[in-house]
Image (tube, rainbow, N blue to C red; front, top):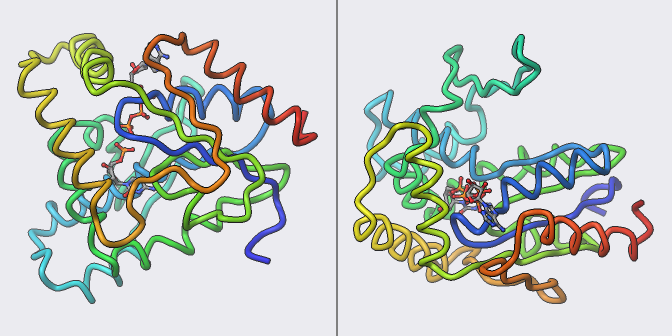
Length: 227
Ligand SMILES: Nc1ncnc2c1ncn2[C@@H]1O[C@H](COP(=O)(O)OP(=O)(O)OP(=O)(O)O)[C@@H](O)[C@H]1O
Ligand SMILES: Nc1ccn([C@@H]2O[C@H](COP(=O)(O)O)[C@@H](O)[C@H]2O)c(=O)n1
């Protein structure tokens, strides 16, 4: 047995709403939350900060296993993500870091290096795990698995709104292109490609509100006896 705490996995492509709904579902259930994409993004930022080559995969694996990461509560009651002593909560959220993370994520040694760190998040009373391979590789024993998707255009539109709220200027054509490239890379890599886990409930959120998606997942959790 890999772990004993119940796990709900929520996988899917970029911008499908995984992070948003995972956080709400975890809060409703009073469970822990794993944002596995943040780990890949943190690694990408560390590689860039240290000016490391991505060709030396053994060193990358060691860095992934030992990367100094902390998730701490700040004065506003929100989570700060701290990498090697520096708060990088916003810095890891750029499209550039997302793209670098996606390139690193295709390296088997990097995935291996992060595997046990991810599994360690499965603690009582339970875990909601958000990513690309949560249901297929990291927590294959999870009894509630969700694959959350939406059209590339809708996901780009959501990302545009998100970036503009932060004051960024957005080239929509470029954004759709970047999202499609990242989808392509994540879905076609040789290790842990982005595919729905066997038995996963597939939710297409293109026409759904956040509340509707959350309700579908809570309903699955209820069927599993988790609430
Ligand atoms: N069903 C929905 N309807 C409208 N907007 C949504 C919906 N779900 C999420 N959003 C919005 O879309 C944006 C992207 O969502 P989110 O960051 O949760 O996606 P994600 O799948 O976690 O992306 P990534 O994998 O790149 O981190 C957010 O601004 C969020 O509020
Ligand atoms: N379980 C995971 C999670 C993420 N990735 C890769 O990281 C990139 C960034 O993830 P976000 O969810 O924060 O956008 C993503 O594009 C994936 O390449 C992964 O491989 N497995």
